[in-house]
Image 1 (cartoon, chains in turn blue, purple):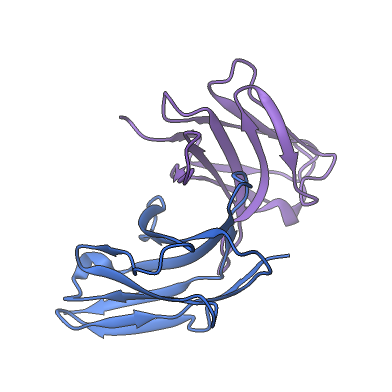
Image 2 (spheres, chains in turn red, yellow; image 1 turned 90 degrees about the horizontal axis):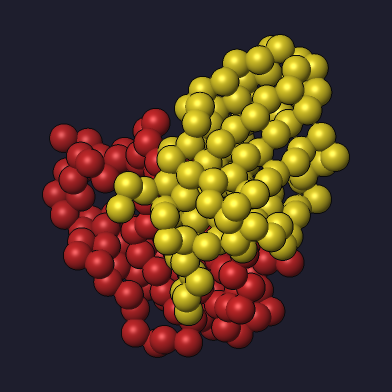
Length: 115
Length: 114
């Protein structure tokens, strides 16, 4: 079974600074996908960034980037130039390649961006 | 693209009552998923459909739960004889069959069982 662990229940960052959210996972699979989703307060979950395990290059989407360490089974999210709108719960998720029916989510990290 | 919609957004019911939730996926998406999210936790997979076929159900989906997607478009999730432990956010997501199969989530239905 796949497990996803987010060890930081809550984090704070000052506006315009950089913050890194941690995620580790456990799997015996070699081909899989990893995701970060953002869930703002009382709003729906939206995709932030996606990483294919077979790609060595770390994914980047504007101010969001990941540090994917396959051997260490680590998938951290870096948010640069934090904005007040980044305040949300962030969930790391794992999906086995070829098993397109099930995400395994971590328990989430609540990020507070302070003015 | 209007996104995934869910109805109702909130439901309060008494223990023992039946409730039904609806999910309308993104129009061209052929996969639809249901998740349950309790406070302080990430979503947990319940079941998924490809078109109208229900292809997998989690052990979390007890006999009191049933899901349908009759015409491969919208889906309903029914909970019979609700229990207080059913109180949670029920999330729906949809995706288009592709290499990455990224799931897009709806706003959820928050169920409170008194």
